[in-house]
Image (tube, rainbow, N blue to C red):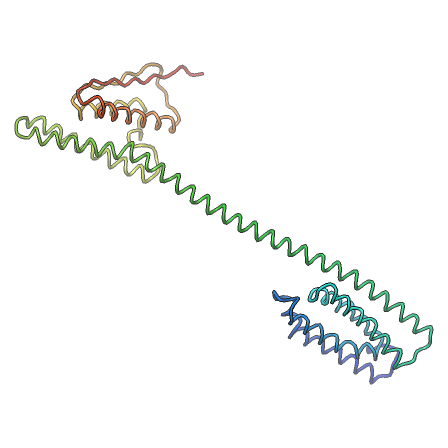
Length: 309
């Protein structure tokens, strides 16, 4: 603008000053409107109005000011709705051209050239603005999609945590039923037996007290293993056959009825999960035997290893 061939120096300085004022106006009103959530609201319209009022007199004074349209057009399409932005864009092209013609009375050839330039500027700015609006719309759709995905991920994490907590409670319930509950039942039965034996059979009462101590230690070990989430205490550092042997021995000591373990096939280590299931099933079976058949019924536990494939 300052280096234009015409008009004279004072109009060019005035036009440049008006255009220069758009920078503080943008920093004060335009940037907050562009970055805020109310871009299409009153702050955005107020900024566009101020920018247009600064642009129009400068564009009337100096034709080169029309280049500023390429900076204002994207902002108009960002801050205004499509129809309003197109109307403002038409004003940015028509008013400066009409004012320039009326003020400076240029030759017909130059006026025609400026008219074509204004039309081309309007067409290009309209195309650029529509493209800007489409990009903004896609960005908002992506933002909504990302927000939905994040909300879905949080919901999935919450449901996964809830499902994990429920599964852990079910596991703890099964483990307590198969280990600690049965151990406490054995302690209760042994204590009742000791009460009836103290007067007439002290040696047997002492054996039962020793068995109570052993059962309590085993229950404590099971509780620690349960909290740690490891394998049952009976399987720690031993084989399945050894664990079942100790289980049969404990059952025999608690009930007084013979309980023996018979192992057939070639003993070998099994996956921990399989050994835990076998041990728990045997514990439940022995508890049901004692509950439904009585303490005096002999019990045989058969552990049979199938041939390896």
